[in-house]
Image 1 (spheres, helix red, strand yellow):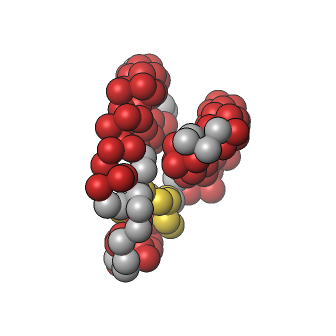
Image 2 (image 1 turned 90 degrees about the horizontal axis):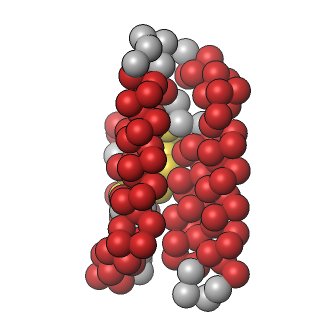
Image 3 (image 1 turned 135 degrees about the horizontal axis):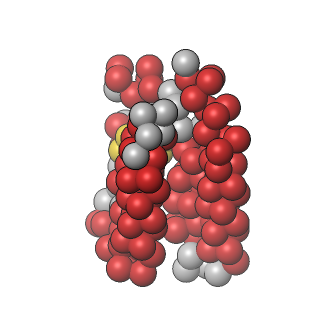
Length: 137
């Protein structure tokens, strides 16, 4: 089912969403100050590419150690992200989710948009892991 969901997701817009996130990440990497947000864009792009069978977890849980993105600088980065881009992106994903929920077939895609909306609000310090690994961590 994950394979079918991911293939349908790619056909019906997921590929373009992922490419958009990767482009945003590349633009962020052009400036030194944008690198943390660029990394976050690549994480979101990875999830936007193949959302079925993947989950988002705190990076501290995966690596078993704190880093700059999971500490106070990560919180500050997430606040800046939220103010300048996060809530707009989350709003876009929420609107897409509502459109998907109109049809029965679109409900799984709407759920993935909700996952992306949550990640778009505060992506720094998060990482994408396979769903089976997320449940054992």
